[in-house]
Length: 544
Ligand SMILES: Cc1ncc(C[n+]2csc(CCOP(=O)(O)OP(=O)(O)O)c2C)c(N)n1
Ligand SMILES: [Mg+2]
Image (tube, rainbow, N blue to C red; front, side):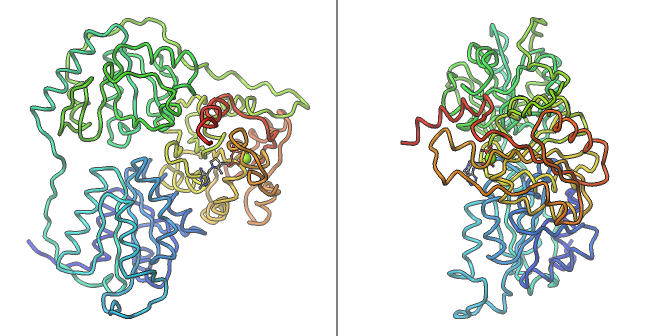
């Protein structure tokens, strides 16, 4: 049955139906019509200071809610979120990029419209590289079908998509056909064979272990994972990218595995396993500890979104979802309750008066501070590497771009995370270098009355890079970070040098939920977390 609807209305209605309540973005004349439509819909518009902030916010939102939306104007806005969209693609976060564009009636051959680059297609061509599906809604006959096709691709692949809406098409009536799109390529016989072979391996294994990957979370398979862990009692680890896919105080949890960057006991346990079941962990160089990991393909079962390998056998058309469900339904003998090397449980932080804060003590303080209502957002840098050893007690409460590692994620990420999950209080761990890139989004946080705790680790520059190759290019200007709330007219700022001051600042922030807190922690420029030290040593060998 065909019915008629305006293209912009249909897009909004579909996003709402898919669980989206917020749209992050910055308007411009090519997008104003659509912004107006969003403003007058039930979706809440969140105006960021910069487009990159909106892109990161939408990514964090998507990680918590299953879909995020960023809306921008043509090229000047769109090209600024090429980077955030690339990150969402690499780390499988389903973000819908909506860009305004020149009207179909304006796209005449030699028109030189403002914001245009080479041709009218330039931005679309760029985003074809960065998304899993894309469309320009110029034709009303296909526009609604195109919206469905592209949104389904975002949900199916858990990757970003691009929708360009020419400004004269927002209110154009179009016909809807209610066509249902195929969900997956799945071959039931291949699924059965893959599950069968994997189960056989697991039964025969002396020391099986599960690597629980981020894709379990992205594909909504956490309940299945919990069930599998409970039933089989197989010990498991996470990766930096999947950290907190299962709560980290689980009795069978080993910790974060990252090759030579992992704690020694985790590394030894995983690398001596004769059957490593990798469920949706992408084998990035970071996961592999810059290729220091000693894993053999022969002993590994890997479940990808669309195929499975068991040792050297590859099973095509076996979706992750069906493979995991197959394992859940299979007879796998229960492992004994033998002791496994769990992460060190956080001890109460006992601050020493007058003692300067070190990186190691900083993370001990944070470990003692976080609770189940905290969602930690860690920017790449020592915030992430030091954050590796935090014990996150509730699943999905640690978010970091741990593969694409674009600096500047965490502050705008907190904006997205708190819109997505208002019952959580974000704790942002961000380096001074990264803060100078997107910290301006604290303004958006102030504007919308949010209350994250933002900790700036001030080590006077790009600490991560110094051990690899140092020079003045690794210095940044020493801002008075804690004065920012004054400038914004909202929030509480403070500067911390000693353990005592740190503990007091954290407790003040905990007690005051009415506004955001910015805590600047002064650190020695040469002080690094143990994880970061191991990483930079591995990386240094690759520079020259
Ligand atoms: C957008 C972006 N630019 C540059 C880099 C390269 N880079 C990686 S770590 C780093 C230094 C980060 O400094 P800071 O945020 O202060 O954290 P720290 O290393 O001091 O802990 C840089 C520049 C990057 N990852 N992302
Ligand atoms: Mg720094």
